[in-house]
Amino acid sequence: MSSQPSSSRLLDLPRELRDMIYEYALTEDQGLLLVERDDTQKSFKGCRPTDPSTESNCLKYVCRQLYYETKGSGLSLNDLTIRSEFREQTEDFITFFATCSAGQQQCIRKVTLCTSYNLFTGSEKRDSEWPFGQLLQMSASHPHITFHLYLAHLNESSRGDWFIHEATLLYYAKHGLDVKHPIVNNKLHGFCKEGHFFLPKVPNQIRVFPGAGPGFVYCPPRSKFTPGKWSETEVTVFQEEIEKWCREGI
Image (spheres, rainbow, N blue to C red):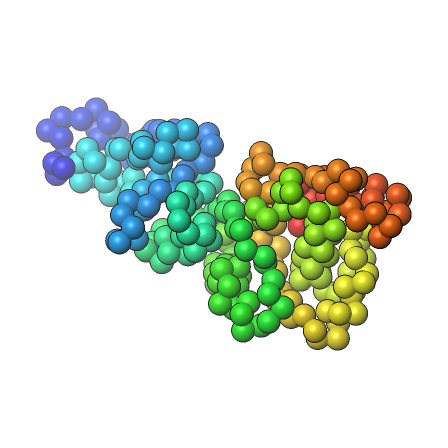
């Protein structure tokens, strides 16, 4: 990397114009994909989702001035997602976040993650150690970040009853045990209210969706709801609310 090109029309421009060019060059239509460089070093690079082998910001390799003027710009210009081969995306993002400077952490605005874990364990101690519990702690200390979290275990093979169970716990965790909503299963109310199941407070900047990620959400058909447990009217309402959940999150 050179200190600065001997002659550069780009660097001859006023900084305000260069920043506009950087914004155009470093904004990715589908967001920024974080890919681990080396499993032992916990180092990540920002890539294009359509081509994970291509790093988004190549300008920083031209010279030192472009390095310092564009380093970290991708974090503020793009929504982030992460590719994990062997671990949870939530765990990898927490690892990535720890490698960022305080300034870079402040640049991050929106993160999309997928988890295969159940959100709630029912135990306050276990919840704090669970990946979702760590994400809650991060959200509390960095309220400027919006998280979209997808639940991979709610998929084509899942019973409709499990969607209702997860949605009910989410509404309780977000709005309290006295929340009124068509999808809430009142049979869980007493169980939670009597202290048999611990629920952490989930802030509004965390939106939770069913499915493995954007474009991979799923609404169970009527056959996936336990026969005799719900009326036909209830199942119709549940399906409408799950479809809304897929679009808007909870």
